[in-house]
Image (cartoon, rainbow, N blue to C red; front, side, top):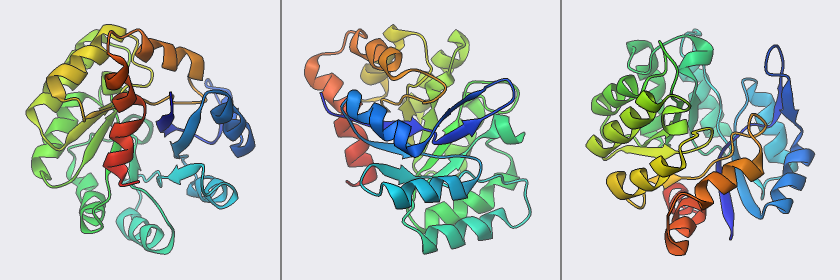
Length: 238
């Protein structure tokens, strides 16, 4: 079954993480697991841009922006206008802010001007909880928001991600690192068959594990094709 990876990272993450994949290593893994394209990001946008240059047919890039940094919105606008970028990546936990903090709004405005989707990490207190992302979606109802990890590893936050997305038409869910296979089917049925994406979160998670969790979720073959491939392809306009 063909796949598009809606959430992955090229580059090395040190400290406690100690994980990483070069662009070449990721492309090799993608070939092994029948992944046509990966949407990538990294804290240093130059790493992302280098991977896009090396493998333009394999990668789509999101600049990882920190709204706490002065000039972040202007920098994002310049990057988006200068390079072929596919959206905006925000990581409230990594950069210490909440998704509904007004400091985020200038970046969202720039994404809205360009009709670019916003991919937001979710699932960890106090910064990246689903409810905050829901409040951001209310502030910007015409901006497409992807709740990455759909609540991640905590059952309460996973349920909240589904509940919040079901209430907001401009929220989509991505399922990497989310351990409950049953919630994939629930999200497909409750949020909508077109609003759920498969992702790996490589190199933090193994492709085989992330694929198998979705495959055993109880979805039919045609529904799995939606999650693995059709939905994100349509969402990104590919």
